[in-house]
Structures are given as structure tokens and as C-alpha cells.
Length: 606
Ligand SMILES: NC(=O)C1=CN([C@@H]2O[C@H](COP(=O)(O)OP(=O)(O)OC[C@H]3O[C@@H](n4cnc5c(N)ncnc54)[C@H](OP(=O)(O)O)[C@@H]3O)[C@@H](O)[C@H]2O)C=CC1
Ligand SMILES: O=C1O[C@H](COP(=O)(O)O)[C@@H](O)[C@H](O)[C@H]1O
Image 1 (tube, rainbow, N blue to C red):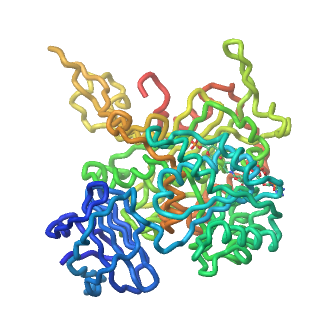
Image 2: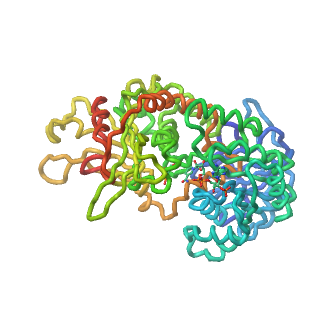
Image 3: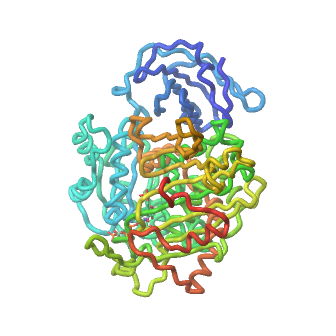
């Protein structure tokens, strides 16, 4: 009899190893099991060798257990009854022996749609920049790669602009790529994806138009039970109108409606709280999926794995061994085309308050009770609430100016026609943050984010303290800084994790150099790294909330940045100007030096 806990851990592979099964999916053993269990919605367990997925279907759930790293799949309940799952003490469930199914299942022919439900995503604001450039592309990758295997799936575009289905498909087709699997008839898959795209014109505040959308969607696929999600790709000031109409007029009878919201979630604490309050008039918190796409990036996902599944890191993860931590975001292009949006927000709201702070929270949080969304988000909130609000003294801001290089003139931020000539909006910022808890007391957490810099990168740098009484000091010079270890988690590009160590240069002498223990993903893994949105969309559809921002997390995040944002604006702080394509304002180095830190991305060997 295998045992597992609903909230804390997954069964080990060995828990199932005594069960024989003749059923295979892609060569992986599969065990089916059906019973009654009212209180568990779904449990996802991930480990390298094991994936367990339970779906609640009314009062029944079916469990599909795939071994050896196979992906989880939504499966219809199998027609066997192995008896009830018993709840033992401490919430441990006892799972009766699994009856192996009689025939083997071939994934290509497996019918995942037996419940005949349809997932539909409506891109609200389908005529806009985000929708055109990114949303449909993400949906296409997601649909072609994942969803088409699992769901009836439709995508609706909704906007005030008039468009036919054919025009929408034409617009969308221009953004599609064959990034998914070149070998597997990509063209055919794109066509299949486009066939699932429809357009419905309407106003964002019209109940009637949303009702028509809902009806059209019902007709399109003959929904038995429909699972509508709305992806808000509109300016935030019309979110509430759209949500009100979508939830009251285009939502499913079974209340499945979900709303996926892109940042910005407000401009400060007050506007964010007001937005949340308004959304909650029409939706429950668990229907709102606030996307921070950095949480869907592979190396950000891996951060917790690195920390909590490797003995060598966690003991070092504190003020005792870590001198400082750096979160660096750089883009080698400006706000081209997005100045209108950007000027109202600036780099602190665009990148720091969300993407970098989310990574920081995952980096610094305590070990969660389990991998469940609420347990992880609880720990993130705790660490955010232990942080000191950012002070003006601890911030440096910059704005890029025009620069000519190699005969090419690169524009200044204010050359954008949608940006006022006298704009003081920062396109660069560096900040020093502190976590006032026992683990991190006194450790500077430095952030740096900028547009129009000399390269594009996102990385986490962990600089360790020097070795006390280092025996090899004289072999590496007197600068102890040169001898400290540094762990670099390169989120993009060229995903990698590397550790800088001191090493003896081979030879008869005793000379040390700095070398890297390097896990370069491209060299280690042949599989393509999924786009952040593929993961996030799948999770939103499946109701997995781990990678979405909860409202209290959002409040805590805004509390840290709102005072300084207000001060910057009220005092009209002039940003330090830096040339397009440079390394950014020199002020960031003074800020780091104040805390005895050297930015890790500067220097010959990064
Ligand atoms: N663009 C980007 O790269 C990113 C955008 N975001 C966020 O995503 C959302 C969408 O961004 P984006 O596509 O750039 O936005 P757009 O300004 O392009 O607006 C999207 C659509 O909304 C409708 N719309 C625009 N303004 C109004 C208005 N005042 N009243 C009613 N309808 C309006 C228009 O459609 P129609 O007239 O046809 O109805 C427009 O095509 C925003 O919240 C933005 O902050 C987040 C990250 C990146
Ligand atoms: O959210 C945003 O992110 C992008 C950068 O995302 P990436 O995945 O390409 O690194 C940034 O350009 C944009 O300003 C910001 O709104």
C-alpha cells in the first residue's frame, strides 16, 4: 500500500515499485485509480523520477501516475474501482493497490477530452501591441505543444476594432514561428492553431457584447461544460469594466471563469489595492492570475530546486557566508515603441518592483512547508514583509541619452514621440535593499535594471565572504575580494549556473586562478527550454497558482517601493544621463561601494 500526504510530500518512486503495470504512455508505466475523496482538489508532485497528478471530478478523482519524468496529463477516470482512499492520522492518505489497466495507452491516440469540456481563452484587447507581438504567439506555442494534447481549445480575440476571423488569423499568423518542434509538421500545427482562433468585436463595458462573445464561444465548439479564461491585454484603467462584463455575461455556468492579468498591477500601494478591491467585487482571489512572467523562466523555477535539494547550498544561504546578493537586469535596446506606457511607470515599476523582487523573494525565503502554492507564497510574503522600505539614499536613477557609435545614431529616451521632452522617468535604476530577519541581517541585496545598456542579461549573483586566514592569500595577491567565491545564476540569455572557485593553475609552481564550475544548459540539456508563458498559461488553465502573485504579496511588494517612488516624483529627482549602449550611470558603482560591493557583471571575467 502506497502512502502520501495531501499537503506535504509526494510518494516516492519506490512506493509504487512493487506494482506491476502493463500500461504505458510514451514508454512510461502508468497506473490508474479511481475512488471518492471530497476534500482534495489536486495534488501535483514533481521530482526527477516521479510525476503524480490527481484531478477531482465532482466527487471522484482519478490519479495518473507516470514514472521516469513523463509529463502529467489530464485523464478521464478509468472504469475500475480499487476501493476508497483512507485518511489516516496526520492527514496521510492510504492508497489501495492500483489495479493495472488492461490495455496500453498510446499518447497520440489518447482521448483527453472525454469530459468534453472546452478551454477557451479570450484575449481582451486583441488589436493591441502586446496581443499582436506576444500574446497570440505564446498561446500558439502553448496550444501546439501542450494544450492540443489535452483540451478542446479555442482562442478568441476581443476588441472594439472590427475584424473578421480571417483577419485575426492573418494578423496572428504573422507572429507565429516554428519554434515548437520543427520536425513535427509545424506548418500543419500552425494551421490547426489558427483554425481555433476567432474574433468578436465589442466594447469593454458592454454586458451585451460580452454575452454575444459567450454565446459565440458556446456555438463554436459545442461546449458541454466550458472553461473560459480572459487574458487582459488592455490598459489597466479599463480592467474593471472588462472584468465586470466578462464575469457576469461571458462566464461559465459552473463558475470556472479565470482572469489572467498582466502587470502593471497599479502604480503604487493605493492604486494597486484599489485595483484588487475592484477586481474582487467580481472575482474571487483564486480566479485572478496575476502574471509575472519572470516566475515562469526556467532558472527562476530552478532556484528553489537548487537551494532546497542540494545539501551544499542551503547551509551557506545566510549572512554567515553570503556577503551580498545582486539581481541584475539589462536590455541592449530602449523603450522603442513603448514610451507611452513606459513613461507613466519607469524602470522601478516595470522591472524592480515585480520581476527582480519576485526573484529576490524566492531567493531569500525560508523553506516552505511544501511545494503547494499557498505554502510557497506564504514564505514569499514573510520575507517581503521583513524587508525595509527602500530609501531615497539607496537608489540611483538614470535615463539614456542619444549616442552615436560606428556611424549609427542611437536615440535618447526622450526622442520617442510619445515621451515628453522634459521627462524625468528613469530608464535605469540601482538600489540597495535589506531584509531585517535573522538569516539576512546586514546583507545588502543590490538590484540593477536598465534599458539601452551594452548587453542583454538577467542574472543573480551571490558573492560569498572571504576565506578567513586564507592560506593562499599570497598566491592570489592581497585583495581578498579576488579570492571570494561567487555563484551566478544566469536566467538569460544562455541559461547557466556557475560557481567561481579558486584553483591551482597546473604546473610546478603554486599559482592560483579563478575558474568556473559551469552548468551551461545548452551543453547539458538537449531539450529546448520552454518559454515562460507556456508554463504560466498551462498553470493558469490547470489552476496551479504557485507562479502567480497573490494579493498580499503584491501589497508587500508595493509597500517597499511606494515611498521612494513618491519621493522621486515629488522631489523631481533628475536621473543621471548615460549614453545609449553604455554600462549605465557611474552612480550605481558609488552606491555599491557604499556597501563594500562590486557589481559582479563588471570586469573582464564575469
Ligand atoms: N506592450 C507590451 O509589451 C506590454 C504590455 N503590458 C500591459 O499589457 C496591457 C496591454 O498592453 P498594450 O497591448 O501595449 O496596450 P495597447 O495600448 O496597445 O491597448 C490594447 C488595446 O486596448 C484598446 N484600448 C487602448 N486604449 C484604450 C482606451 N483608452 N479605452 C478603451 N480601449 C482602449 C485598444 O483596442 P481597441 O481600440 O481595438 O478596442 C488597443 O488595441 C497593458 O496593461 C500594458 O500595461 C505588459 C507588459 C508588456
Ligand atoms: O515585463 C517586462 O519585461 C520585458 C523583458 O522581458 P524578457 O522576458 O524579454 O526579459 C521588458 O522589456 C518590459 O519592459 C517589461 O514590461
